[in-house]
Amino acid sequence: MKSRKLAAGLALLGVITLPGIHRFYLGQSRWGLAYLLLAWKTPLSRIASGIEAIWYLFLDDDEFDRTFNDANGAIAFTETKAKPGLDPAKVEQVASAVREMENLRQEGLITETEFEQKRRKLLDQID
Image (cartoon, rainbow, N blue to C red; front, side):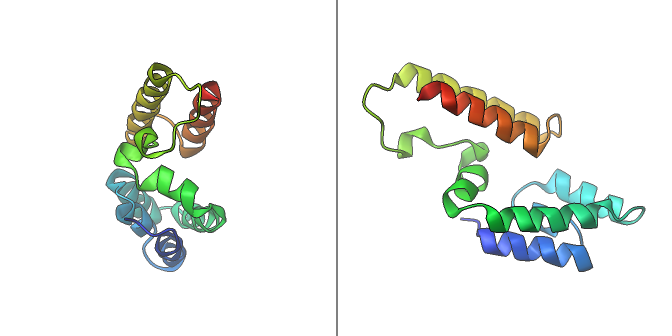
């Protein structure tokens, strides 16, 4: 299980030394490699590492776990307590859509922010 504080610490370390090391820790090796390659030409990856360190520190543990510790980064609906009146088919449909978006995020086709916005919209459909 990945630690939010360790990820933030590695991201802060990336501002000084190797940007992107936190991405390798979080299982996002393509992003980690991109950060390392960008570090040779521009300070953008160091800036991004600093911003992500702050973001990780402001995330609560549950949100971090849902984003980085569940299979494929998707919310584990089966582990959460079901609310009365929830349609299991709807929950599975939303879970499937979140998994697909996570794959797009990992491939770099959508940003972290876009992923989070779309994920929240989908989750709002369940309530």
